[in-house]
Picture 1 (tube, rainbow, N blue to C red):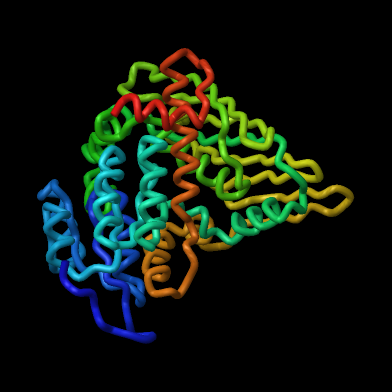
Picture 2: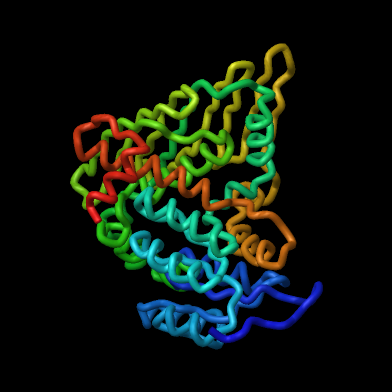
Length: 372
């Protein structure tokens, strides 16, 4: 690999490449990095050369590759954004970490708990940053909730209710709307990727509940211990409706679920309610409204700002990668949170396959060893 930039001091920029030029990357990571004064977007990479060319025509990055191995060999990089299909995250991220690059992985981090564990451990061994693409973690209200709960001020968490509903039925059926609205995306839409299990893993769980579960683990600091889950596809290739009953370490219980079949005109919900020994939190994440309740005190209320980007700061994840590389900021969405989310989803999909029987989180690591 070529030597990295020798720029020093405040003038130095983090040299970052983006692997995966699909719809979310062209909407978020590429423009976010190009607009950020502390980052240089060095190159784009995608095995789909048509998507790669379309992204290059839009953003004029200058250097493109269809093979990330070649890109990492030839370019002087500090970090990479991995925004490929879900099933490919593990292999690509592992290769990048092995080559001493910091990595931001789009959600879901990976599909299996053991793979998440391996990446977190590898990042520590290589002393590289590993972060997950959860923009809600950069919302200041979310950070306030995390600080209050994890300070112990409200006492131990006893019950969590975590629900995400939206309209993804068409995506799970392989229709992204491009045929009806060709100009509806900045460059191109997601196409059929979310209807293909070998690329996406699951449906509602891996595409949507990963958001809400990541938010739950980030704010509460919990870790799942045992999961019972049921899922239904309703005629689609992947799950459309999921429900999970969760026992967490430390005796807290929770309900986690979602439905991808809201009306097209409905805004959906991402609601997180956290009930503790001495208070509770009720969060409407999609609309940016949160209330913290304490015993014998007036509620602490948070309302959304005028800018939607303050609710869901989508550029924050890749820009935080640059800041962490440069030592300007802490990792705002660490790999450990992605790992806990993967544990929950891995257990849930396995439980659903056996009609809702319990799956213990600790058993996931033995299961994968036996399947290897």
